[in-house]
Amino acid sequence: MLAGALIAVPALAGALAFLLRDDRLRRWLLLVAALVHAGLTVAAWFHRFPAAPGDWLTLDSTGVFFLSITSLLFLLIALHTAGYLGNEEPHAGTGSQSVFTGCLLLFLSVMTLVELSAHFGLLWVAVEATTLASAPLLYHHRSPRSLEAVWKYLLICSVGIALALLGTFFLMAAVPVARQGIPLTVASLAAEAPGLGRAWLKAALVLLFVGYGTKAGFFPLHTWLPDAHSEAPSPVSALLSGSLLNCALLALLRAQQVAVAAGLGPFGRSLFLLFGALSVGMAAVFLVKQSDYKRLLAYSSVENIGLVSLGLGLGGFGAYGGLLHALNHSLAKSSLFMTSGNFLAAFHSKRVERVGGARGIIPLSAGLWLAGFLALTGTPPFGAFLSKFILLRSAASQGRYGLLVIVLLPVVTIFAGMSAVILRMVWGTVPPPLPGMPGIRRTDESRWMWLPPLVLLLVALGLGIWVPAGLDRVLREIVATLGGMP
Image (tube, rainbow, N blue to C red):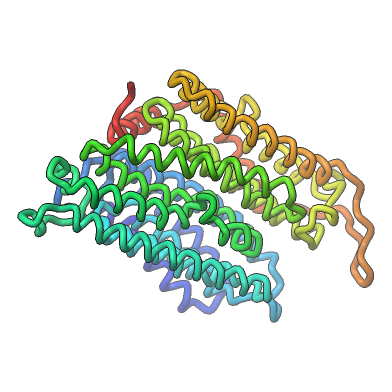
């Protein structure tokens, strides 16, 4: 019942948002739905249970962990969106607020469905639904570039989801003929694991990693991500990077749980290591060349999802660090994307060379921009430092020194590349106005535009100092389903 309410509340609110005619009512509806969803998510922490073989929905530790990230982000992004939409002037290049608010709530509903799905067929439907619900959000600004980003997003993710469907069929084929009637749930497949066809299961894992890895942003399947994150409104970019990528990652964790039960845990971990190493290494190559600060953040998402994947590939304590890094990345990246919207509103450009001296124009946002950069890159005492340290320590303890080099060189390169951009934007010279454009001057900053990213950064800072006992317990429970601690 609780799982159904978590999915139904934002879905019903989204449908209602399409019917309302008053924009202020829609914004209040968005906030109320986000608050109710957050309250239900808190209740889910006290009602966790492993899925039974026939259950299509579950409130297990894996789902509740990622659900909590989504719910927290959505609540704060809803607060930010209220200010964002309130300041937005209606014009021909802006989409309807009813479509924006309605699709945003439907997006929350289908992401929740992904996180609570225990059936691989339902999981596939839910991941595909996230694409359909979020596509109109990417096109909100109605520009040619946003239209191109939407088509690329739909095309590439559709190819990926088709491969994931084929992988799901291969999971069915792995079930012995005598047991073909069992439901395609994680618990049922894990119970039948000794009898699953290993060749079919390996092929299914490869297809699922390629298919869902496309949505997760793994290199070289990431090509939709920079355009989508760059052209989407800043609150949507925050959700895409902070929550949607985690949804695709969750689908891979479900598949890995079956692989571990079938004795193919090392095979699944090798796929995590492969895609993780490629993503971290190649993200550094593309990131240092970026002159668009939102695309810069997008390539950083490729790097960080790669780090999470490396942790999961290491297994044990490394998987613990990878899961913790997924949380830290979501907090810092969502904060930065929300703050990027403040920069765009003040400087009217996403080009790095058109932004400078932000500390005198938008001082609060400039401070958040700098702090968000430190949080994202793992500067102590922020939480990402702890999660990265756990990853590196796990790799060293396993004697994977080559992997240490693969991680450290790109991470240092990315830190240097991002710091050059961030420091210039905050402390550089205010650019002269373009012909026909007004000069850039100090801007009043609404509290709804800076308070939500500040809260996220405070949580990220807190996680660098102390990991709550409840969070630690949930992370260990998830790791147990992936093979356990050594």
